[in-house]
Amino acid sequence: MDNFSLDKGTPIYASPEQLKNERYSYKCDVWSAGCLIYFIYRGSHPFMDSKPHNTLTLIKKLTENKEIEIDESFDITIGKIISLTLIYEDQERASWRELWLSRLFADKIQNVRAYVDYLKNITIIANWMAK
Image (cartoon, rainbow, N blue to C red; front, side, top):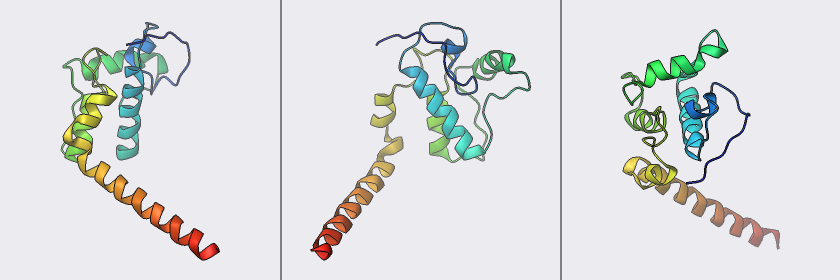
């Protein structure tokens, strides 16, 4: 696993290792994806504090039991994805491969494949009609 070091990013999407100015891997992107999924689903950020410099403290507090608490209003699949991506220690956080190989995305992948096939068929018909 490659490690990188950079002073860039938006704190509310940054992983704990980024906020601590430590070396980080691609799993910081898994964390950011979890924050983004949470925001899209809930309409708020999971680790928002009125003082930006308290973000790391809030992240640590809310994830100290390894998993962020997901309330019952979340869709079960979305909640599981979020709980696998927002784990404080990056060694314990899911990788992209682990997420994709889990059954969480199985039906979503089928839907994407069906949609891609649909778009291919539409393109073939459109090209045929344009001739």
